[in-house]
Amino acid sequence: MDFKYSRYVLSEKEKRLERFLEIVPGALSWTIIIGIFVFSIVQPLAAAVFMIAFILYWLLRLVYMNIFLILSYMRLEIEKNTDWMERISAIDQLRSRAPDFCEPDKINSLKNKISAYLYCRQLRGLIRRDDLPPLSRDIHHLVIIPVIRETIDIVEPGVKAIKEGNYPCKRFLVIIALEESATDEVKQDMYRIKEKYKGVFLDFVVIIHPAGQPGEAKVKGANTTHAAKWAAGYLTKRNIPFENVLVSCFDADTVPNSRYFGCLTYYFMISPDRLKSSYQPIPVYHNNVWEAPAFARIIDIGTSFFQLIEATNPQKLVTFSSHSMTFKALMEVGCWPVDMISDDSAIFWKAFIHYDGNYQAVPIYTIVSMDIATGPSMKKTFLNIYKQKRRWAWGVENLPIVIRAFLKSRSIPFRKKISHTYKMLEGFISWATWSFLLSFGLWMPGLFASQAFSSSMIYYTAPRIKGTIYSLGSMGIFICMIISSLLLPKSRVRYGIFKKVRHVFEWFFIPVAVIVLSAVPALDAQTRLMLGKYMEFWVTEKYRKN
Image (tube, rainbow, N blue to C red; front, side, top):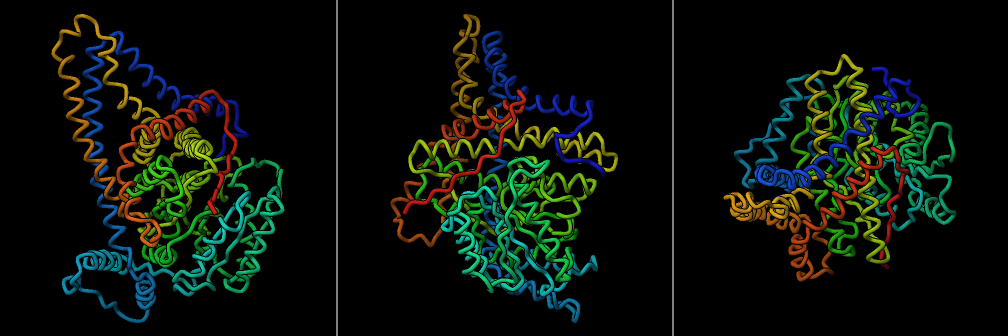
């Protein structure tokens, strides 16, 4: 579909529709928060009944989320030691001989048995479709790392991890996408990395993105798009087909798992519609997990949990942070938006709209590790996390553009339009409101109780109902405690058992942390969009303790 994915250069009719849709999320969130307050004054009995029903719904939703969190974590654990290169080799051999299917019943380990069963099912599906992928030796990886402030100690661990991974280095084109406005120190650091890894990969280049280009905002997408267009020329000269290239756009602090690119290549080869798919790993924030304060650690581990849950629903999964896609698709949709902050989700929606809904994000069960936003002081850490979460919540800027595209398109199935619109809107609204409702909603009717309500049965039973439901809900926190401790990096032996045990009990602070560092930033972002006070891109500060 011919659609410009931007809120700029619109007709007057489109501008009015865009502006109306920008108001909707913030207006709904504030209506819910203020409405329950007013409702509690005007109709305290009805408000109490509503809040009991809402908390019961929240409990059921929590049970649902915890079930899929456990299932997703189990899948991640099952595939943790999978030899992806061996499986890639087996796919390569399908051209020359019939496959030797594994027999899960003969495997002793339950984890390996489940992994083998899933692998055999995927392999049979590939054979049945008669859609063999290119040979693995012909598949290349383009890794783009945008840099503006990050120094060598932030960027190099990711490059080193690519080198030391289990995928052949000579199939990588690594690009440091460096902003022209970066300091001399940062530029020197990037060229030092280039010199150190020169000759290790197919190529390692530093591309300078000129400042002040027409039509561009000061956003990461403009930088990565400039690098991708340079890479297009490079690959063309080398006669490397775009459909055989997987591009991974990594944040500067991203450190991929040693098996990441083997896992990514496997899922690309095995996927039914591989050229029209993005590939989403599970992000974890382990680079500086023990240096970060407790509130910072809990918030970002919660982000990892959310992505684990989302991975169980590929039909509605949207790319987040570091992810991968085919270079062919990237070029066909026009690369990342050059005038939007939320480029990681925007590129998914650009592709979804361009391919008339025939595009999906495929979850891959491996991890990439990143930094928790910290600072030299507790106050600075708090501000950095708040700004980072507000920037993530600014992904709400995609909603008006996506809905405009859905209204214009006659090719995207109606069911997909409704499903994705509801998920986007519900996700942003619940992000901004649920914490407030759960924390303050049920006691407000009692605070403003009239004489009639004070003598009613619901007035006396509501606190008990709330307490019972919250006690059941605390099981969800207990599950989070266990999984978060299991996800912690095992190699950091210098941190004793006491600190890891203390981390478990940090989860009791999650209600306060979620309100202050999740709900408030989300409401902040939606309010800014509602009032037309558009945000500028804020680069998350990376801080390392010596």
